Length: 489
Ligand code: FUL
Image 1: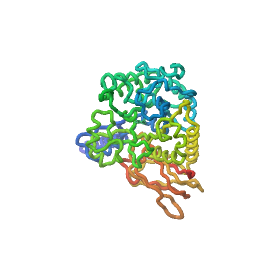
Image 2 (image 1 turned 120 degrees about the vertical axis):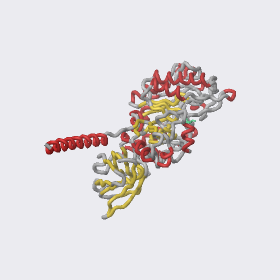
Image 3 (image 1 turned 90 degrees about the vertical axis):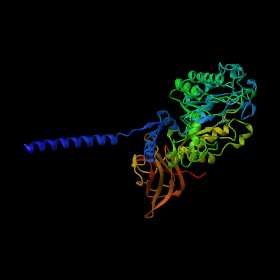
Image 4 (image 1 turned 180 degrees about the horizontal axis):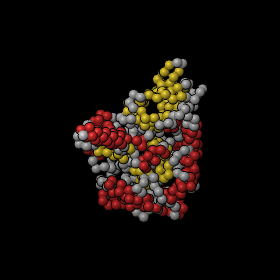
């Protein structure tokens, strides 16, 4: 009897242990992720915050945006014809008269230049609209171009469809022409109507770009923007679009010189400028868009929340944002653009390169040629990965190394490494060694990886490569490693 009871209790214990084991295993394998934003519990420890931060992931559209890598910016408008960078809103619409405007020429040049998306200045600070809006007379409809019957937004949209490019718009909230600017509720309504027209008449819009420029209105009135209304308008009409700069999907890198950060966290504690608590949160952490550090553990320790808010590097191929013929000889060199590519795409950012159409309404021949050269250079550099099985996913713990075989007789000077950001951005520090003449030699090291990190070093030849993840916030998901040879310029 005692024996039977004992057997029964033994069976129960075994059953419960197995059950416990299965539950424990399944909860261990079931990783929880946070999309776009996570608020830390009030009394979260640093360890808890690190853990949560490592499981913060992009939304589907943020991921698609990041994977595009190269977006073209097109500054075009009344300034193209006046030679200004910022119009005062008083230039006559009669000045807008491109003689050969051809959006297909733009789209083809950009497609050939390797760009995946195009963002057009539908309205810059001067208030002149490139589409025949119902909201103001200050638009293409009062210009001589196509006798006032033209619509640049439509023509570019159609050209993007033809060439398979995604389409985005820049629309400046600061408007130096609108008489209601400074009468806050009235202008907010006006701006949201302009947004609505753009978001409902031109098919899918993939990115909406606006900064917070907030100059003085007529009679010194101060316009208070209703960011909530603007973002709601966007979410209502184009829920799949990413919103940039004052939007909350894409962050301004902090300069207009093409310089990404060496250490670039897409999981950042910087609160987007359109959120009402933004000033308070960012001031408490002592950071703004331009801070060098936006994601370290020191900041995380003091932060109340963290955002997936990746960086976009906006820079012009010419000194100005708008076309000026006097700058025809100052188009950036290929070498300069390649450096920018490494410092943007190669530093976990998207490159938003401005290529302004000229007075004819064409992208200037020099610029067309330069972006083609850039695309050829990038394609040639990255066409042949010299690492064998570099694209096999590697789950790496802190301190772990992995060796890779290199194709025989390869020469290389560039390392590419990527994290699978659908599982978060985690790596804090890594190093790169090669096996040469019987010993390991460190040739490079880096901090963050994120979507993509490129490192350049002197030309090398070796049999093996060894990557070490010196520090990571949680198990790193390395999804791609490559070695390439980039011709010197
Ligand atoms: C800035 C503007 O003031 C410049 O004119 C340009 O459009 C740049 C991309 O954004 O805020």
